[in-house]
Length: 182
Image (cartoon, rainbow, N blue to C red; front, side, top):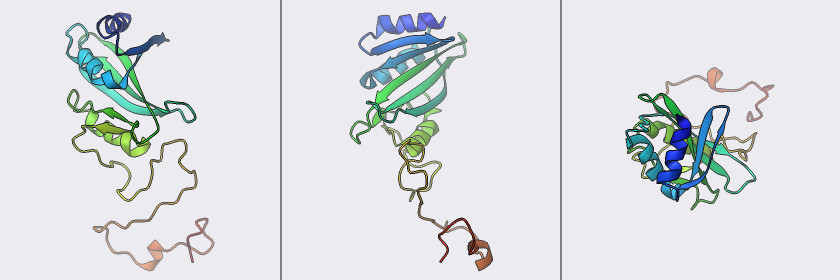
């Protein structure tokens, strides 16, 4: 059935499809970013496709390639019991590192897009609440990017609602592996 999904995409939105393929039963379509919502809307709203579930949304970092990032959508049709993977490539530059939000189609996209932005730095234009979800607001950078420094140090921010502690619970020992001790 999924082969017919790829065929339908190629027939109905040929201007949006960059390439399609299948590998060990996984069907994939790479689409133009500017037509991403058009493709996702077709996949969800067409009764013959009926991809009612966004099962996952993530980002792949292809460091050293151009474009650098791929936003990946895993879709599933509960009614037809088939799945498809949709990918959209985005560049590394600040003005290119974005895709339109899919929250208007699947509310499940809201948190997944926040996580993708927080960890990879890919923005989702039109997202109703795009802010950090795993890292704290003062965190600098995006830790799952392949060029994120392995030994990077971040500012230690104490939560205002955290209980008070004594010196023994907050101070590191002099022979600690963490060299921030004076």
